[in-house]
Amino acid sequence: MKWETCTIYGHADTGKTDELGNAIKSDVPLWTGNARFTPWTDAQIQLTGRTVTDNEQQYAVPIDYATIKDAVKASLGGLDHKITKIIELAPRWCSIQVRVMKNGK
Image (cartoon, rainbow, N blue to C red; front, side):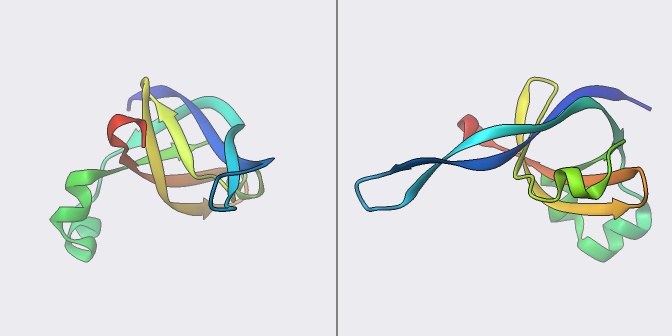
């Protein structure tokens, strides 16, 4: 299995607003460590369809759910990924489903 350095981020209010009055948020690291790439199983591919698995990957992270429950982004292998799903594998592990973000957005 492949282990990669991972930083998981959440959002925090900066106390500032944009010209439309929307709150400006900044990325705040919630956890840093190693995450293990977990390939899709045949059953998952059949349930979700190939289009999901083409664009998304799964990683197992050795951290409890409460720490990363508000996560929105993960940095893996030097690339930013949008977190689409967090699955609790209590008590010490979680699985995150991520989609690669293009141009850092």
